[in-house]
Length: 376
Image 1 (tube, one colour):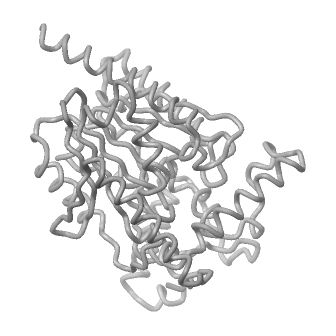
Image 2 (tube, rainbow, N blue to C red):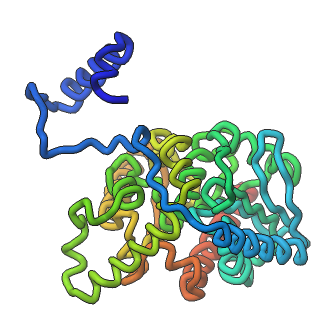
């Protein structure tokens, strides 16, 4: 909505005045009269959808890839379900329940969950964490999957769908391991906000998360806008021409494959509640084991900012723990993958092994804590 439109509406004008008052009194900011022509607002939810149109065979190819993935899942025991409010997911029951159910939320990718199948089944959930020893849920998000779909589920519909899936397949007292990659971390934010799900989460795995510091401009600018229009905010980490060329190629790939696709653009600009999808670390229950995996040269996420935020959070938690205060959330473990970009973990078996090792170690800690509680 243009500022002039807001001025002409008394309710909008009153809301704007209230925002300015809060910024001035609580934030200590001052606003001089007039405007600065050097600054241009990013009104991405009101701007036109900036999509690059793709021929039908692109979507047909993605549909075939998704069909192949679905056939493979069906062959190994997964079954697809639909919830009352539209959420769809794949589920496979445990042959012998030895670990907490695993819930996975995919990121923006052609085919949705299909590209993640090798990583999940042959990397993350292998060995002691085998998918045969736990229930596995793979949740779908069609608008970000090249699925020719303008219909988007709201936060409330997604949460209700997840609750319905859990009630359908597992006891209400069962603890959960939840994992999300990239955009999937925003759905994990919704899970943490839900009292019914929040109390059941015991392990939280964030892969290339965009939901941490989502209110900062990095994710919006890096994903929705042409990077040639903005100053490279991480130029200090890309001084060599080879590194700049690699980064340019990766950014171009993200733009062509993901951020310029029509249905993805429409979803992010019209149907996604950015303001309600940032995960606040202090809101995570203190007894949840949290691990954040970051790519050092991520083209979307500002890894350096998030790393500093995690360090500040851990220092606050440690300081408050000395006073027996647990309201600041849990200590968070971070893993930085050197010299790699966004989504590198999806196709790299070495990264799968890293995730598997961390999850296995944390699950052992959870089991030991449960044993100690039973003894007491």
